[in-house]
Length: 327
Image (cartoon, rainbow, N blue to C red):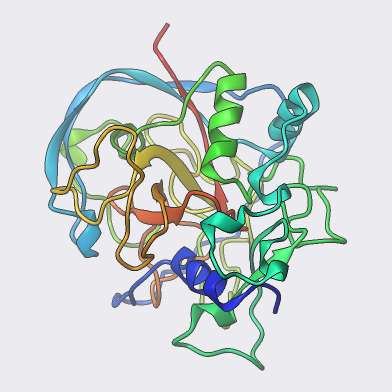
């Protein structure tokens, strides 16, 4: 395993905390992905009307307390940003992602030099080293892993052009959004869009009906009953009521907001978020769950769910989408 022990603690926080306690997921018929997109331009935007809704949930403590929020109208990407679209951004700007840059030693004092090399967190289950109580045994910091090399050196994007881009830190998502003339959604905007802008719908069920999640016992076995055992090309799963795909499952998505443990706590403008499970680490909010979410471990594939994510550390299940003002 590459990476120092301090980094392993951070990687553990990438995995959705807490054990779920619901019935096994119903079988989902394997899906046939629709025709592959043919453009690498920034994707289709969906109009999201203004509204007021009860935000949050009560499965995990940091999802509450539920409270009413008001949202102005905006537009949001119909899908997650793809590898093809991100590659166009990099080609035009020469941008280098956080995972491709050496780690600043000041951020991790005392960290071995080997753990300060460019890289990212990759999900790698190995039964020989598996410890159910230690997420560091199924997450590995891989030197050389990045959006270009999702599993590390030797892997590439051939055939993955229309998968969601991953190994994206907050700064990377923000840079892309600026290039596209957009921004990241706030946590409130993201959740309103994921709820199909329907205040009367309440909190959707705690089992995904048509989403790319983990079927089986996480992290040991994924049966792939939904047709995928990893990320799926964007748009392969049924859109929500607004026509937005993959708001739930597939990959986690960055929001613009700093993380705080409950919504009753506030963060001053410009102040990084904080999570007591990751002391000293600046964290932001990611939403939507991913293909690694399973009922036996993580039930964060719900609009009201949220997770704290290290601002500087990418992972093989973290991507993003963007928003824009109404014309």
